[in-house]
Image (tube, rainbow, N blue to C red; front, side, top):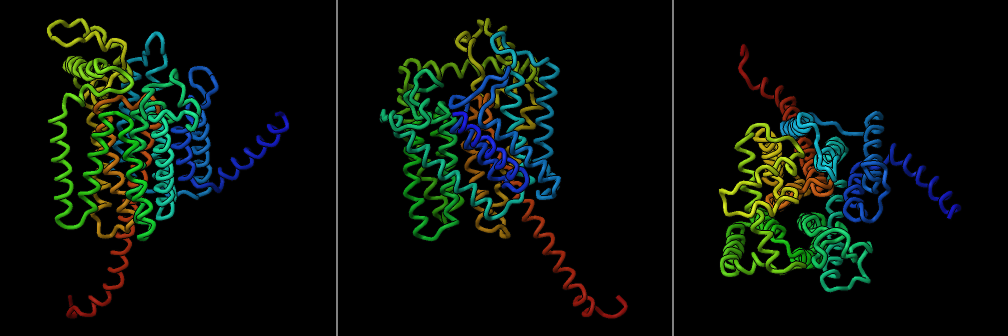
Length: 471
């Protein structure tokens, strides 16, 4: 074992030094995403005080160091900051100020939960966004992102089907088969051991595979089309309503923008009508969905969201502008649970964190924090729409815009039913795709500006020769 360590450690240090100077930052960011999703806390961790050491955190530090080194060596591709970037920076600053004014008070059992939420949920994703935003990108790096997500989706889909069929001997990593690790045992929860995160990644990988078809001809596209039903089946195996709803919304957007002519209205319209019909006819079955819990537990989970909404409204009315302080909902909600003017069982949410990312931001950071975050998402959606509709955008850029639009719809549905900021893997995935899209738009706009300037320089002498003398 000591001999093996003596071989592995020097080799790892050499490769780390090579990566710092010459490594692809996009590949490093993808390694962070895959490492956090597949080889997360439950796969490996070492306790180092309040912040455990995990694979993805080591990779984050390595990629950040590589970004600094390559920036010093002028190997990055800096772009001027646009309004989505400034809005994102202002949002992160507002959360940091909100938490600082509240004193970063945690719960007695988890005193560092507030500051850890800021770091995991927003600052690490913001760092990855900035690295991608300033990295050398283009057709090949974008193809690498789409290909990596497609391969990750195949792995997650196969693992999900193995889980729900009880083939625990074949799943990897092994902690997936442990019912005492994570949540949602019995559903497709993947190496994240959480059905919502697994569903978010599966849906994103599904849309990435759909977008990746620009890279292939007929035969290659046929192979991708075979993989899509496999990923959709895995999405269904999560038995999570928000994942189903978000994936369906993303599919409608993808079809509406990808299909030609009238088909872009007819096909999504028929799918939407069928979905509404099923929802109306089978509403009771959806609200009492049988998963790893009982039907009564499922109904209770649905009713708890009403309690969360009611308490959030009361907290917002008391502090509408600044909120109670970032990370303070678990303790700030307690006085409101004694309200007896409603029939809702408010006590049922006493031991729970918030189940809605947007309402959590509203109660903790007020209208300022939520407004800035909605502006960030709107800016990303506008960027994606520009890529999809711009006549100057190449196929790979349009595919990236379509991917981001679909993922934003999926992400918004998860945010409306779950708090996604306790680990970095969920927000990091969306932030990285947004950074790639923002870079792509900035590059296209810069190229169009240079093209127009070049045309003006070429045509000005011709125009001057055609004008009458004296003008």
